[in-house]
Amino acid sequence: MTLNGNPNLRRVVKGSENGKYTAEDSAIVSMKGMAWKSVVLCAVTIISAILSAVLLNYFISTDNEDALFTLIMILAFSAIPLIIISFVIMFFPKTAGVLGIIYCVLEGLVMGVISALFDLLLPGIAIMAFIGTCIVFLVSLLVFNLLGQKLSGNFVKFVLISFISIILLEGLGYILSLFVPAFEAVMSNIWVQLAISAVMILWASFMILVDLNNMKRLVEYNADKKYEWLAAFSLVTTLIWLYLEILELLAKIALIAKKD
Image (tube, rainbow, N blue to C red):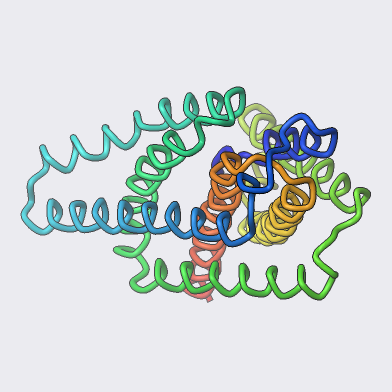
C-alpha cells in the first residue's frame, strides 16, 4: 500500500476553514484545477508504469538477466525515496507540485514491474485491474454526487479510524504468524486473504469519497490555489493503492479458480 496525502490534506482543509490557508479570489482552488492536476499525475503514473513493464518484458524476452536484475533492484530500492517524498510532502505541502510528479514516476515504475509480473502468470489481469479501478472510481464519484457532495464529519472519522484499525490488525496478524503456528495457518488461508483484499478495496473506495470531500471543502473555504497539487496527489495515491489491491484480489480469485 502506498502512503497517501490524506492526513496532510485534512490539515490543510482545517487550516483553510480557520482562514490560515485562504487566498484572494483570483488565486483560490477550483474543482477544475484539482481535476486537471489529478489527470496529470495519473498520466505520469500510467506512462511510467507502461515504460517499466515494456522494459521488463524486453529484458525477459532477450534473456538479458543482468539488465533484468538491475531493473528489479533499482525498483526495490525506490521504496526508500518514495517514503522520503511522502514525508516531505506531509510536512511541506507546497512541494506536492514537484515532488508529487517525482513520486508518481517512481511509483509508476514499481507498479509497471508488479503488473508485468502478475500479467506473465495471469495474462490480462493487469488491464482487468485497471478497468476495475476506473469503475470503482466512477461509482465513488457517482455516490459522492448523490450524497450531495458533502460527507458528515462522523463518516470521515469512522472511515479513518476503522482504516487505521484494519491496517494495524492486519500487520499484527502477519507478525504473529511468524511466531505462532495458529496465526500462520489463519493468515495463509486463501479465503482469509480474499476477505482482507475485499475489505481493503472497500476502504480504498471510502478513502476516495474522503478525498473528494476534502477537495470540495477546499473550494468552499477558498484555499490557496497552490494546494491543488496536494489534493490531486492525495487522490492519485489513493487510486494507486486501490489498483494494487484490486490486482491482488483478482490474483487470489484466479488462484482459487485454478485449484477448483
